[in-house]
Length: 300
Image 1 (cartoon, rainbow, N blue to C red):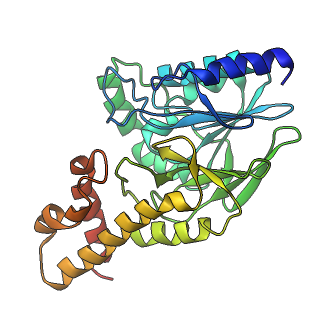
Image 2: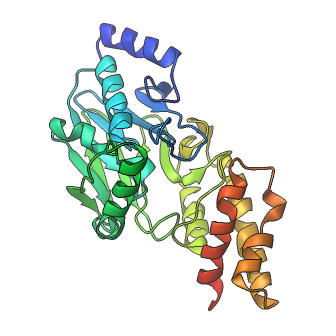
């Protein structure tokens, strides 16, 4: 960035809105907007996930374009206030709508839309369902389902000009199509929903797989992480402790319930209650998480 762009970026970073008008600089050249600790509503435009962008010498990479067309448009406007460099990549970290439905705001930039190798299958199964539900909520303004154009099966590098991002595809964990991005230049690990902080996790993949992926991620030489929900900059790997405790409790108590013959409905009401009060939106998601865990572990 030149001096003028840096001054604009600094002004934008000084005051940022949870509704997507500005983003905080969490590391040099990395800007993120903290999402609201809410479920999607007509008033928040599904601006509930942490979304942001990374600026290189030659280009920009978006890390999750937002939860609706308006959310994506706000993010794009923020990028354009920060730098005029081309938007070369838009990373779609996984299939959940709060992270990807802003992609339509970036189509005109003709970037590579980067996704897990299994994301096309997930979008084929869920994309229109998600869009229809969001359209009803947002009066037809959900945004289009945008398919990835660059698929990651293992790992790939994204070149922004004197800044190379390492994108990794993970096994079945939070979902079956999770991507993370490492910026070696600043030691910043962009984890999206493989890390939840303060807001209760949402299990949509494999409980055992998620715990296994966290163990692998802790070995990465990063000192800072950006979660998918919660504060936009946290210490790594210490920030994973609460999530690991919650998932470990879910694993242990679900197995105990199954061993005792507790049925799935009763388990959903009783497992993990020691975690209540430690997470926002606990009662909205814990029962669902237990149900997912029970189905995974029932024949374990």
